[in-house]
Image 1 (cartoon, rainbow, N blue to C red):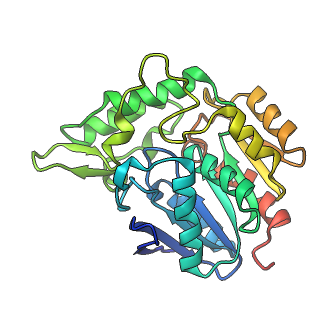
Image 2: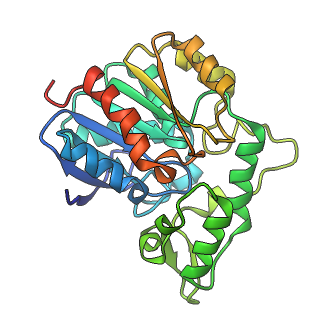
Length: 291
């Protein structure tokens, strides 16, 4: 199913780009992880659209074709404001929220603070408790690779960073929309340089500049989630552990959990087929496209 590409200007003045797969049914709003763009989720979104849902994937503020936020406004409430504006723009009264990593924290925060907007919640390899070393590894990768001389260099860096990913899924032609070319001809990631800042000595890795909330604040949010919820973990993830999943389920007792074998933190990219096997049946039961 081909995607439509759009952008709009919410009330706060940050232009947000998005893609849409019109399946004709109930809406799903997809949010990518930090440092990604909406294009990382095209295969999953197209599949869900083909199964009948109306799917929209956003470029988060500061990422992809969306504008960079003035005043470095990149807290979870800032991102959540864009989701509310997007749903208003689309004419959606509520939607299922599917979020990976940073996108999952935004979705969790919004499901707690605006339960009227969230009909179902899918959290992909994220929870209030995250593993220090996994978070640090992501930060190190984002700050270490400032630019690249060629797309082949990008491929080599990503394959070294994520050995779980099938090599043929990381190709130069599939990366261009996640990158931009500088006037000097070098390639850099398509997000605000704000996200490349290295962590300061003594930083608590969970209280990142991206989210701005502590694990305790996020756990308090989780206790408020009432909608059907699924958390999906990559079996080889170093970011979300089994203990992190159990703690999330203690806060959201009705939450279901699924593990995708042979996948790391980037679950859908590593094993998109298995990811969809975990997610689609949950949505069919909890949030069928026909209502």
